[in-house]
Image 1 (cartoon, rainbow, N blue to C red):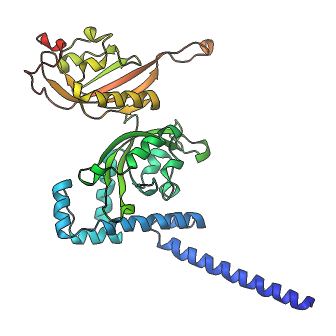
Image 2 (image 1 turned 60 degrees about the vertical axis):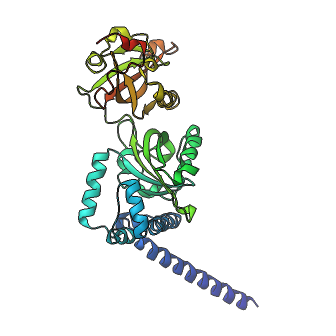
Length: 366
């Protein structure tokens, strides 16, 4: 009786060993099919292999669903200003990018000063460009297949959901998205990578559009370019002026270039609100930028109009950050440190409609 029991146990152990070997072989074959570097393949565990495989299958499905007929392609070209030939589509679906395409992609990413991200409408990270490690300290394989809500700041989850949500008008228009969010970053202040458990928050300015597919709805996705803030210590030029504001956006300082660009002297702007210079139709844009600053400490506004002394307006974009007015010191640890807002404003156009006066401030000739 004991010999039979031992024999059955030996047979069971041998069968379990064969199953584990078959399973390891299957996962090994699967990992070799993934379009990642061999050095990365060697360090993937089984859950990571499954996660990345599902992610690449979903990405492949997106390309297949978005392979339009000629009529659909013509409509998309008129709508989005681009079209893809059948050869290009097949190449993208097969993932068969050549050396020239890779060089071109790397060039675009270097100009972008950020990384690319594709999210499903449920928040799953379907794709990330491999330069994400440069900006976030986390690798492409660490993030792909996970849900963005696992890495995003808790206070930003509702805003992300709103940008992922499909609206009725999204089917008929471009469905553009422009928002700021915070996600975990493995980079320290000195640019070194750290463990995810000790990660800090990185503020990202995300712009893109919702790619809506009528059928199936699960193939819809959000295409984003993500740029960490502050943006490369923004370059100053003759078409840029800097200003400092209190937390309610009243001027406390403005450099002399504002006179050349808008006609106002820095002295007359002190104590005035930036809302006084904003076109009334763009106050919502400025308000959203102000809220992002209060909640997330950094923000980039959408393009809005600033009124010019004497009449008309110019299109501008503001890069802003909240900074402490006084640096903390050992002797004054408990002292209250008021906050202020530093803005770098880019003037993007010349004066438009110079004969139109929209504010009492514009009645004084330049």
